[in-house]
Length: 170
Image (cartoon, rainbow, N blue to C red; front, side, top):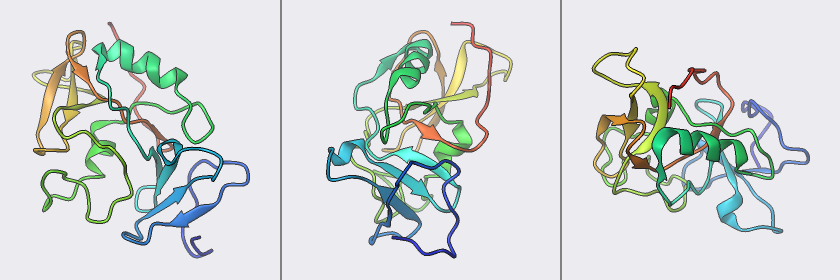
């Protein structure tokens, strides 16, 4: 368990037991013996965000499907997860790493490396274009604009932080 000198998560789970991840102390894992490790959550002490330990391995077609999924998914025994911004996804990236582009010793399970994860950040060519959002591929490190209605990207839910509250036209 992490000590008092470390920051607390921006959200709390009643009777939470945050345990330092021994392979990388940037992260603490919350879990319980009563459920699968895939249901655990990870606290990133650097950003104050709480992530799914095991992001969804099935692509969600269309950003609308991913947003609806985020409102129904229970993570760490709670609802209220959301899709991250592109900046939040990139906060998990180690620029020196490849396939996966996650930091050495990370605690995450089952991160897909073959395609993009959704973000809610508007994509190019114009930030006001409501048909594109940014996505990130943790395998090859590519950041790209994704067509919101057509792509089947993965979801990785996060809690805490500010996020972005876009009005989506889907």
